[in-house]
Length: 135
Length: 67
Image 1 (cartoon, each protein chain N blue to C red):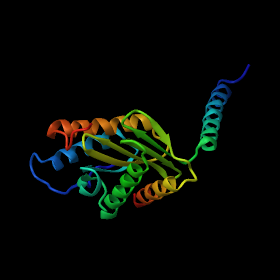
Image 2: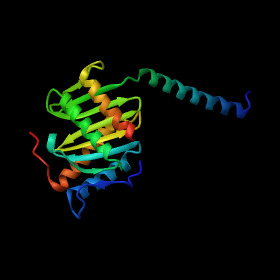
Image 3: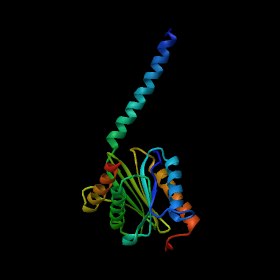
Image 4: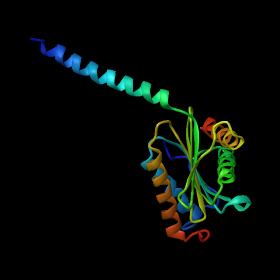
């Protein structure tokens, strides 16, 4: 996936949004099948968009909708989700108060994609500190 | 004795047959699913005909349709 159309909500040198943008660029390089991805800080109603690869506001809204749906479906504290459909695959990974939502083509290696997404969030949390402490 | 080009063609055919069979098996085994992992390490496959799975797959489908 080309990562040429990455937007950040709060651009600025050294900001968490800039780091999120860099992290998504890295993820796009790691995952050739990546279609779109977005990183949010916080959870629930206070969730804030940091960066997104798709130039369509509806995509980020749909990503929030998916994150809310999988977190709501979890019976314990949510960690990650993998949704496989005919049209492609969707992933949601939460780590250190950050949430990464991504879509890919079909037949990607789910465990590898999830691992790469988690490493991206750890990288982002490591450069700016966790958005919240995980219990 | 087989001519060399026949050997190559047969070899190539065997590879394509294998690839086609692999894709057929994969398509057949392919099912939509929603898999959730908890921080405790436990996992949960949502029942495909459940309300929660329908909600999640609808959200995922919308996301995939947009890109």
